[in-house]
Image (cartoon, rainbow over all chains, first blue to last red; front, side, top):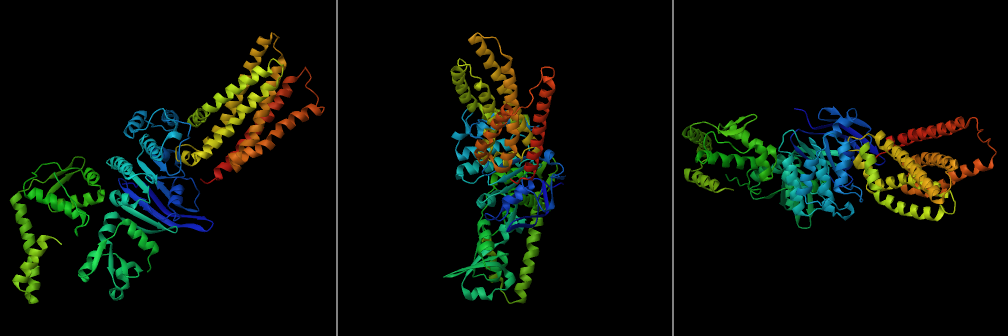
Length: 285
Length: 124
Length: 206
């Protein structure tokens, strides 16, 4: 079973920032959530995958094909949504369809119109009159209308209200009903990923810190809350990071059931992806 | 059919799903040959990962409750329900035997053990 | 690539309309006065619209998005050069039409000079574009617009030089060789410009 995406040892330096040996895969049929703070290297990695920026070294393959050697063929089959990129203000939805018909071999105007209807996007209005949410939905509609097998989404739901976000997540879940389809989604809205991601890849300061099945991550990790005496009793390998405040300690543990068994009196809560991220970035070892 | 999962229960989600489907089969709310929802559809509706539903179905298959036919889907297995219940009882007895052995060797009384069983049934 | 050109033309719809009105005004003002200035303006203004398409692209961060589609960097650059060609040719055709209408209205016979003037300005517009496009690729449309003011001096300078220096005018025996040379020079300039623009664009990171 070929992976939708395979990155091996991607390296890129930009002045004082560097992507170091970034490697991960997107297995076919899965949704991979890509997380990290601003400046951690998420967008740079995605841009390297798309050949928008050059790389110093490393191989990247999509659907078994090298992204440099078979770029055009690959790009026929992927749908991309990039935050910050829009269609020209003066154009309308009809113009886009005409243009895309010449660009994509498999552009399907029927599917496109279905999405326009579903997202309630007006036909003869210029894009300068579109709200942010409408522009995002349009990009998503366009990305899905040439029958791609792989979606690459960079902050495709940021700035949108929860109602619209759920609508869009549903569209992605529909997309993934076909097990030949896969999604790589980078997002700050980790609560979305809590719900739909199959795998979580966490990048920090240019390096991959975590790459795991989301359920295993959320099922295993927990936050132990206690005072200093209890904290000092812990072995170093029982916890990942800790944070302290004036009134106690919060400790990210890898095996919350194990900890609970060992210290049945202890307070151990579940950890969300956001909390895990915060511990890794702001916690101490 | 209803499948209700809790994010705050101590049990992993795949276990909750597997257990609920298992119970439906045992209580004969599902019959041999019934088609179960696809793993992907279930994941979508419950808003969880496909890996989780896959795991749940794997477990059910391993325990003999369902059969998955590639290209067609997952079906409730054509097994004798009474036999399955026997199997589960036997398995439970096996585990309980272990608890009893520990109890006997550490001076834990039968009442204490029974109390623990009662607490466990109520859920953690 | 057709898609890219189509997008540029669709984007310019509004600009065309404004331009159309302006041209009508100019025509009404200048033709009766017998001034041939109008031809120069039509062609140059249309040619300069390529710059407008590029600043629209910059605004929408279009290139970053476009390169995620099955479009090569070569096609992106080539589409702009084709835009230049299409716009300039359209300008020349429009000038011709205006010229013909003008002579009909004024009741004169059609002076062959108009053809020569249109031809020369057409080539100058292309040379002008050849200078501008690599500059835009290197420095962006907005900075390039500033350079435009300086840039205007180049075609004006060429026209000035041609008038002042005593370059032997084509003898009526072989005007075609002269014409052929100028066209070859312009084509060469365009090709060189394309190669430079492409080099710049291929190295660019988005």
